[in-house]
Image (tube, rainbow, N blue to C red):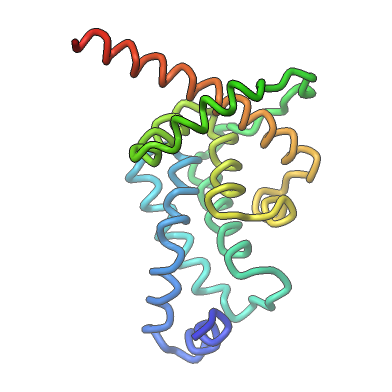
Length: 190
């Protein structure tokens, strides 16, 4: 059964179909909320509120965009509301021409091919500014397009591309620092 069938059934009162939508989207909704509010309990509350808002708004979902983009926008806005005045998305200055060398990228990619890559990625993502980790999560893990991210976050395409560029650069920098710390730990443990 596809999402449109689930939505029709939910609007008609089928709670089992709602459970299917929750099961499908709760993990990424939690990830988005946690990236923004940076607190597990608050993130859980944001997700619950977002699902409630989604449930109430389902009759007005017209299908003009992907359901996931529509719902993640609800999560995103609910998380921002939960912050009550904290501003993570400060304007960035223009990105310069500095880029990461191919050797640095290959080194980082080699590390990520290990069996611990999910743990390493999670640890490195925690070191990034919230706005960067959120956009990287949406783009690479959830595979949202730049256009979809714009609908979720209300950022312009240029701003998203700039932040993704900066986020990738910071990710590689933090990965390098993380790996140096891990290597130092291994040397001291000998």
